[in-house]
Amino acid sequence: MNTDALQSQLESYFKWFHRHPELSNDEHETTARIREILTGAGVEILNIPLKTGLVARIRGARGSSAPAESKAESHSSPPDGPVVALRSDIDALPVTEISCLDYASEQSGVMHACGHDFHITALLGTALLLQAEKENLGGTIKLIFQPAEEGGGGAQQVLDTGVLDDTAEIYGLHTAAENKAGVIAVSPGPSHAAVGAFRILLRGVGGHAAYPHLCKDPIVAGAQIINAAQTIISRNTSPFDQAVLSFTHTEAGSNWNVIPPEALLEGTTRAFSVEKLTGLNEQLKHIAVHTGEVNGIAVEYEWHMNTISTNNDPALTAFVSETAKAMGYRVQPRLPGMGGEDFALYQQRIPGVFWTIGVGSPQALHHPGFIADTAALSAASRLMAALGKEALRRLGAIIL
Image (cartoon, rainbow, N blue to C red; front, side):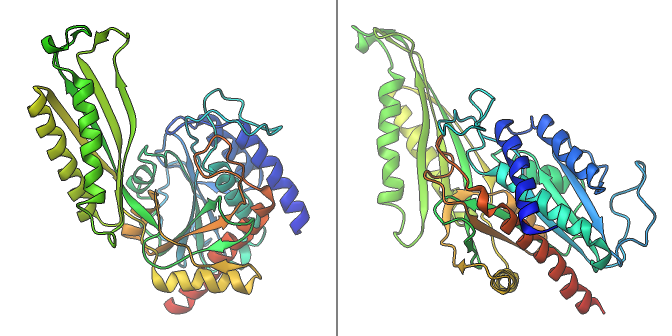
């Protein structure tokens, strides 16, 4: 397929996905559309227990000697040749779009504000390219259309099916709002942070706002916790040890003259190591509990880790960079960021690389005005296809 034809097809797909965003673990229509496109192209879809999302498989000359899979057949039948996985994510965010695009979200309060519609479309393009030359592949490529990346446990859902147990390498892509369309950015080591989420429920004694001395005010205690927590980063964390603590949701009260009995604080902690992330949690819990004690407020503290930090394999990072440069792409290092990515869970088990492609958005990721430049779609598809093919060739040579 020539570049113009591929680009036109991908833009059509992209606009559909952008108009029809769905939240984590509810991507039913999205999954059905992906399945329709892949089936129409003759791409095999594996029968694995995922409620939403799917994994497809393209087997080349060395990966197609096994009989065609029936619904009862295991997806993990030993392939004739190496296996490489390519991953995209498919869920959207609870964001109300303000882009004014003629293909803006048709789902109230839901938007593809993180570029997952771009990721879906790029991997569909990769599937079309690989399917067209499957006889030249030296093994098997698995295409992951992962649900629930935005804190919904999607990567773990995929791993739990066992579909990647035979996989030697894995590659994933993400949009980069800050870079010009088509610019590839990748670096070895951590690129995305380990992410934790906390929830602090303050239980006091409500009453009339005119008589605060008869109450135990959870709002005042909550404000003290928020202020004191700022010292965890500014006074208890080395400036050379990157970390973030952000309060993102506060909720209390329902009327101007009533002190409420409860207040809720929620937010996130982020760092590049599990040890540091755990330390942030312990410090925040200490502040919350003891602030509650001083104010006569009962504190319920909950914290959980969403994902570890990504960790790009150095040798495979060089492979991605060299492949992209050989194809004529502009390649630059990617500075580590505090955004989280559950692609890290794949990298715990499988050597891999998470790289970004610029989409030149006027606004950052997760902003209601985020807009991905579709001009980069075919470039993303072609690079991902090349990574799959070249990885199989390299792995096949090693096996021989």
